[in-house]
Amino acid sequence: MMTMYDIITKKKHNVELTTEEINWFVAGYVSGSIPDYQASAWLMAVCFSSLSDRETTDLTMAMARSGDMFELGLDGFCADKHSTGGVGDKTTLIVAPIVASCSVYVPKMSGRGLGHTGGTIDKLESIPGFSTSLDYDRFISVVKKAGFAVAGQTGTLVPADKKLYALRNATATVDSIPLICSSIMSKKLATGADGIVLDVKVGDGAFMKNMEDAEKLAEAMVRVAQLAGRKCSAVLTDMNMPLGLTVGNSLEVIEAIETLKGNGPADLVEVVIALSAEMLRLAGKGSEQECAEMARDALNSGRALAKLAEMIELQGGDPQVINDYSLFKQAEFKQEVYAEQDGIISGISCEKTGLISLSLGAGRKTKESDIDFSAGIRFARTVGDEVRKGDLLATVYTSSECDINAAAKELAGVFSYGTEKISEKKVKKIIKGY
Image 1 (cartoon, one colour):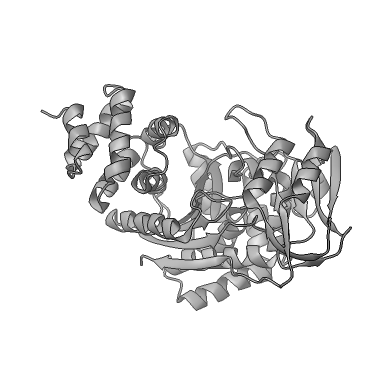
Image 2 (tube, rainbow, N blue to C red):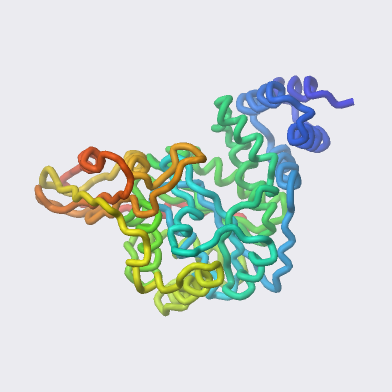
């Protein structure tokens, strides 16, 4: 007879658990027969003893099967993308229409933002009329017509992760790579994609602060996907500065549209092409170089922009936002930020920028907080630019009751200066699992 006491003891002494024991634990915790205090003890034992690849895969699959497992039933390859979170990360809004315009389905379920990292669902809901609450039949219908859809995760998707993540957050057991891996991959595997590309952020504004930890997480997730029978690769991208030139919901949607019009900042375009190419490669569309060229053509030809407009209309949004940005909620207040010295911008603190955006109302301090869709930051200069004292660096926006002057003053402090030009690639490494 299995007991939670024995399972905790085994893991405490770094003894591998069987598949049956892991399945029993997940089922028992979701049903409520295993109390929080025993689950907490097990999580802490995992933090100290870790899990093998097989155990991590078993945990991931048990969590995935704790709720609905989607059978997409689409006549073609389905690709998915997941980002580990960052500041200014609007890549889904660009990557999904690029890949869809190359005849690969992208059925995307995304989350909301919490804290200083933004959520794709919140960004899309800044579009007037846009609905992210789709039932299964409508979700699949949009994917079939537009090639992609973006919807919020259903309440019946991976309930084990919801319970375990809340417990991890309360017991200082979030930073275990097997537990992070199972949390992310259980949701990806439950949604039924044939191929998964992981955008693993590394740096100041990311959960993984250094390359070593980011690589460990990326490799673990790719191995789990492979053991679960899915094609998968990981792209490690820099998050030491915000991605692109905007932070905030409607501002980021506008920047995504501008990128699809061929006007995107170089760092954002670099990441978008790398992610799109990997999704196309997994779908069997060609070599890495051929797929990158295919993605650029979709971007430069306007085909991807047309796909975004189609998806917006199918999900109830006003497609006129593509050409008329005044349809977005307009900020009531704005404040410009100017350079306080001469020099070459050598850094922009990503985490501090995210926290300032949060203070302006662009993010949630709690799950129940309302978002100001107009709030955020638009950068006029970025890393590597030479500036003179008094040059415009950025503009902050808000319609919320907050101290915008204090936010502007704080934003001036996120810039650091040097004397030499800096030019770094955003894509640090690609880990190919297939």
